[in-house]
Image (cartoon, rainbow, N blue to C red; front, side, top):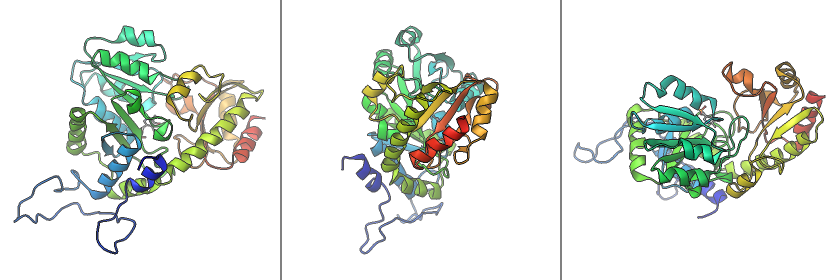
Length: 373
Ligand SMILES: *Cc1c(COP(=O)(O)O)cnc(C)c1O
């Protein structure tokens, strides 16, 4: 089993090995396990927070999609992200890309100091800045590429090389590219994390997160945090996510194709000043993106000719595209990003963020056209 489409279908959701068994596994809701060993128990199957068959199946398939040895799934992307930051020793230096998911920034603003972390935000598209900011006690380097919301591209191979020379762990938030388009562990990163709420779930109806790594001792810490802090997904959510992942590679292919068409269209529109999509040859990070990604994903941000007021009006004029936060679902959604992030947001006033869905690209473009004109 090698190709991603095959892994997605057969990497989880195996029923038990009974004769004439169901093809699709059930949802195992039991919180407790019977101790058959003369009243005493061995192994992890003791209690649902520690272990559950649907969660195992999900961890198995996500690990394989990312080409990673170990995977732990969480109740949300933020729970997955928090677990990685909690592996860092108090007093250590942590570097985070400037243009990073708003929730990750907020996590550090609210808890970085409490957890004793020396947090520094660095422009990771600038390798000299990365080199100069690395310290002897840098323990974690955190990045996203393409970043949110400006789709800046960071060279994962180069940053991983620099960081590992200092013994620092590199974690990549791979929510936007997804393993269909990029596999951070192959590029030298130590950890890949996901908000599975987005493309892996793909239907805007499941909250979840995942951490994937090949590093055994790091994974032991993540597993401990998952089990002891207990932010685990329910069996139903784990089952539904495994189910959704079965069609994920085909969905992702269509997200990529549609986004490319929409980005081309936007880049020729007279009311659009700039389009941030790494698949465009005019994008500053295009060459690096091409070297580390198989395709460029379904997210586009664009800068309109006007200010915040005009951007909000455009978003409000759509007839099909839904005005909403989040991304990665089958339906196209867009938002004025600055309003969503609040006053502290570094997002430009006139930036609209679009998650290109799986409707026909002509219909998506027609709706954007009437909203822009
Ligand atoms: C949504 C998102 C998260 C947070 O995930 P939740 O599932 O909402 O907790 C983290 N990183 C990125 C890039 C995201 O888009």
